Image (cartoon, rainbow, N blue to C red; front, side, top):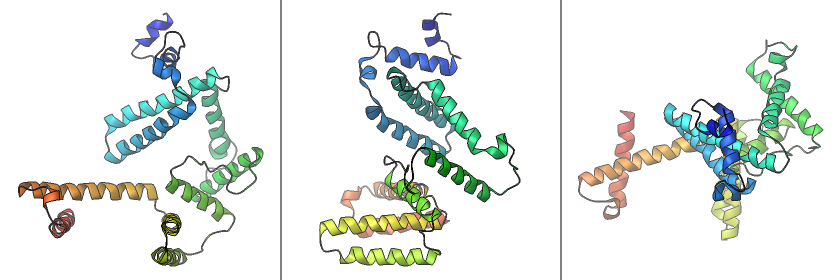
Length: 268
């Protein structure tokens, strides 16, 4: 079978996808848009696709999840194609790299260590191994390696986890809650837009820390809150439509009453 036949081979798997990307990036016969792309221009799409995977999981839509996982896989193929063109790495070397990492980080599965330990202990062992890897990569500071490109809320939690490993953490959730109240007071007393900006950031940071202490994923919690707000606001719109008006034609008091009705409907 010729290479071009692979393009239309329905069960061609990853080999087919890698070849399709090579064709798209071909300087002479490829797609002009695909040829122009770089690591930097593709990175935002990679982040977007990861969130769309999470959204499909939250909705429990397995058909959509299959599609979104394909879109996310395409991002990996895209980056590895660019990396290969520049002589940095290939898809195979990327796959080998993560395979080596997984084997090294699971000595209780692939090595001589016992599997007879708790999930908490396995997590501690995992962090110890990662710390050793950072040491070999000349990342000597506690916060080294926490990616700047992470969503800010997620990065806040990761920074706090790193600091907690060396003892820089509140011992109790009550102390974190006290800090939340302190930051709220500082925000209330801020006298300029610049101060409000800074104090609001501090409040968000400590809220992320509170989530960590409560063992809550703040990104997931906020996604759920967004979904709840959307669901309740659509309840308001539907109720107003039955009255022949739009939200703009309604009053805040009327919409607030409907909001409470939406909350009540969810509880019954």
